[in-house]
Image (cartoon, rainbow, N blue to C red; front, side, top):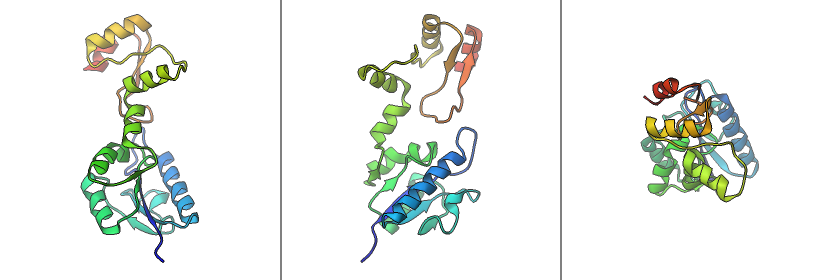
Length: 183
């Protein structure tokens, strides 16, 4: 009897804000799935990671983490689903496109990924759950960000949506620094 297959998308190249912690998560997921009897297919293009070691998964595809490349592997291997949440920003960014192409996303759904990464949606969820959070706001322009910063008071922490690990996050202490950040 053939084992059921599960594909894990790794983190790709290490970069600021996305590094080895995601590889660790992918490796642990692979070990747990193998222990549960699954055939594990790892897709990653970083030779400096443990997830690309020959004994971490049953099959390794050393390919770019693009929708096209992952779909080609998916079509060839026909796994029961793909896990995206352990590899960091790169696989998270392609989850919705993969799902729209008919690929089952196992674990965190693209909708939940969006809810967690969109600062406004996340704040609304926290409010709905009656959880405490620091004063915050979402601005898409300098004028919106300035209005929010005046309401909260400087210094403020600014960051884009859809990034992990603090990438592009900055503390701004005054309006001119905020304007420079928002350019």
